[in-house]
Length: 438
Image (cartoon, rainbow, N blue to C red; front, side, top):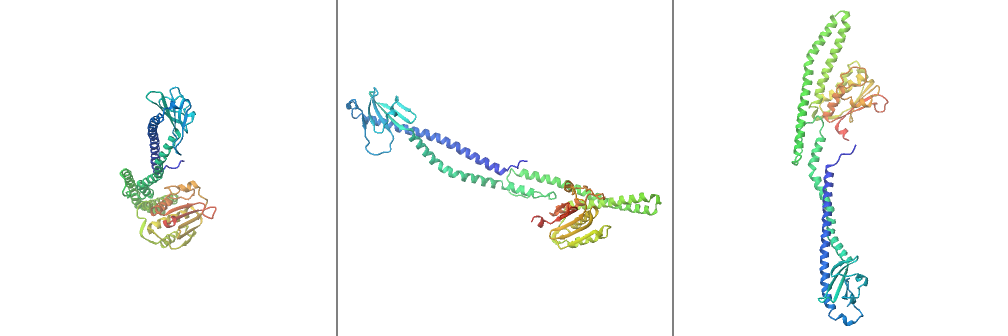
């Protein structure tokens, strides 16, 4: 599965790539314009130099030298690479500059500008057409001038480009900060927190997203409230008729002839099971509703003590082994009592051997023996009406109720099988927030 893409990274890379591409195209365009302008400037200077040199070269009649051409000596050291040569109409060289190479002017030199592999040439004749001066400039001079001009232009850009990319990344991060805050707020919510989102200073593009999430959570809140209300009302309304039916069944057992006793006993068991299921539904409604947190931390040890004392009066109470130490937490006493009672009842009903109950700084731990629970079933066992492989009858709601209370209080419910340091058994751990986040 591919990793999710980052909107911030995509925007930063997209803007950076756009800026780099724009600057590259602008630089290439500038290079072309600079080269054209430099060529025009150099050609203009070459033409003007040629016309002035022709006047100076013809100041002394070149024909007076006879057939012997003469080279013009330098007046001193200079860095000018212009070379020139004067010919008559027959192509005979009469005068040339000291640095002139015959190979540069070996080919035909038409009037005006021409270009060879290494030089840019310009030829001009006098009015009579008797004399022609050709002047040559190495193309390397022009390339070097263009290169130095572009380097001077690019140096500031190369310094500004990293700064621009840093500014793009910073502004992208700052611009998406509110989106990150909104994402963190949504991610930090659990299924019990359906309050409207409180992220402030959102950009106008994010307001429809926030409003849509708020509307969705409002609809979910109404649906959950309706479901919980129905569950609680139905369980509550069933209490009285179930109690009445159970009383009638017990009276029937006392008065019925011996032949009807087994059927009356089965009726009593089913009514007791229905009464337990009704009680569990009430607890489930409480677990999935609000009010599982108290205003201030309080010691949960006495609450667990009451739950254990009540469980000891049951038929399996002799199996309990307890280690109860103080634990201060902001969990409602009634909610904690429901959580603890369901974990203890689950261990006594479906487990084997001693049931170890421990309370301390690490939270509540309930451990029992028995065959290990399969990993796939362990992941589903906290769902409603999901039961394990135990042959004992149960409502299938005990661990779902415990998980709902833990979730609503910000606790974590861990189910382990086999139990730690054992090859069998089952362990349930209710871990408070300060321990779960450590």
